[in-house]
Amino acid sequence: MDNQQLFENIKSKKSFLCIGLDSDIEKIPKFLFDFPDPIFEFNKQIINATQDLCVAYKPNIAFYESQGIQGWESLKKTLEYIPKDIFTIADAKRGDIGNTSGQYAKTFFDTFNFDSVTIAPYMGEDSIAPFLGFPGKVVILLALTSNKGSQDFQHFTDISGKELHELVLQKAQEWANPDQLMFVVGATQASYLSKIRNIAPHNFYLVPGVGAQGGSLEEVCKHGLNDQVGLLINSSRGIIYASDKEDFAEAARIEALKLRDQMELILASKNFI
Image (cartoon, rainbow, N blue to C red):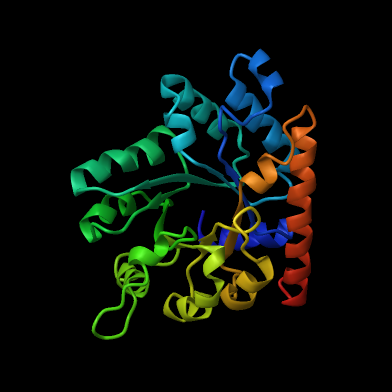
């Protein structure tokens, strides 16, 4: 799925919402343990309730691989269940030497057929290149994240006055075009978005941190929109764990609808719809 196709989906659904499937076996409603695959059942009901409100789903791979073979089976069934017109993100944060990255790329792009995967760029171009060898697939590089520890390295300034995340944004654009490359920019870092958008004007950004982590949708859009919207706003816990009872899917829909409605107003105000 290229940027234009993603943009068309955004306009059609009046939404640029990504829902994170951070499906924790310890947090899902207890009645789901009566099903053969509780995690898949949880995901299936979330997808049924929200698929018309979002343009992307983002399973956090840690919550699946921690469950061993059963977790990978739950992930596989989840990917097969997601409608094909919805963009899928493997939130895996991989990144290693070239031959190892090649195997990771096969895992997420061949075995599981994700549309995209998150990558840590610290090891440089040869660790990213194997992921870029899959036509139609997208690499999502960590640029400026929403966690407290982002201050430790991502804002380090070199002798030219550029911060490390700025160097990542600039250098990565030498490796791939905007249809192949997205960036993670945390919602709690919204004040940096205008500068980031100047550095990478045509790329889509995956923006976590709206909702449970305190990021502001309005601030992110104020500084981060481009002429194709250029944002995928991710919400995970604030949607999927809106209830721990049998009404969890309905509660998730209510929370997703709140965000979608805000997004619709923003899109309309900017003449996207």
